[in-house]
View (cartoon, rainbow, N blue to C red):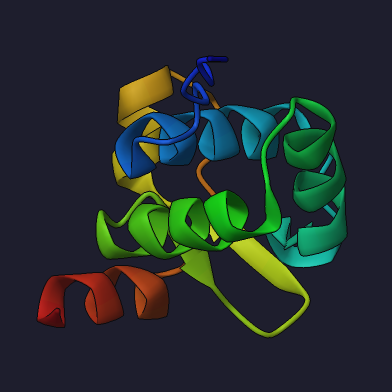
Length: 102
């Protein structure tokens, strides 16, 4: 009998942290937006599956670490900036208000 090793992204919180780590390393385009494809491919190259990616993105948004501005871009939010100590705080006041209301 063969045993299957569990994926290191099976836990959505761990996967969300990795997603934010990747997003933090990516160069932002105008207005601090990070193109989702710049985060998606490195996550999948780290042996993440598309389902794990979707779960990680949903978890990072739910935790307020990422803010989805459109179908093609995200922003790193203040909560993630504090978590990772990154100097780039890309959320606008609109994003902060949206997170505070949820």
